[in-house]
Image 1 (cartoon, one colour):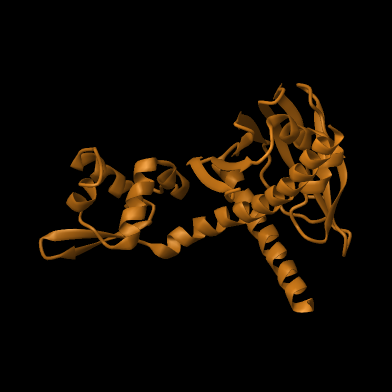
Image 2 (cartoon, rainbow over the protein chains, first blue to last red):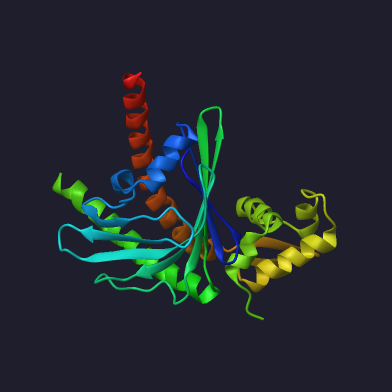
Length: 162
Length: 109
């Protein structure tokens, strides 16, 4: 599949698009079943996802937490489901939980909207991350940068160790 | 006036202008030829891009040439690249997972 496309449709929004070679019911399952979510939502090598509580009804709360297996440091996201339409859309609030990793992504929750669309067995997924304000976006920008650098360093460690 | 760099790149015409002048410095007329829009509209976009310090102007003879501030563009690009990296790592893991589930379902049949 083609790599993820990232764009900024407005000054407070980031849009990520990607297609998957699977019917929408399977993609939906991978996005909503905690046992499956754990298998792919961890984006950094050497990290695990000790907490993965999901909700698939409006008003339901979710809680995700990642841990760096090496030093035990954790961070996560929490939020509330705003909209759930089977096989087509999930919208939820998202608050950064700095855990013991620190950093900030602003005070107001961001709104995450994920839409699913299947054509000929290929599922197109669009993820919109909408920040509450430009200040929050800038806070996420600096925190995201740090995480990204941390990830790159870890990957470099892996290469050097190998 | 302090404009926001994200606002600058949120507009599709401005993104197209950025792509054009990233290759070479151009006059507003030359830029306008690439769009179904008025020269005035292009000037307005160039003004916004200038206010964000994304483009700089240089007078050559009677013409003004606009060029892209690559360093400024890099700032925003690096941030989006982090997003792309994190998401792409997740998505390729999701690719593997979906392939596995699909195979399991087929074997059940």
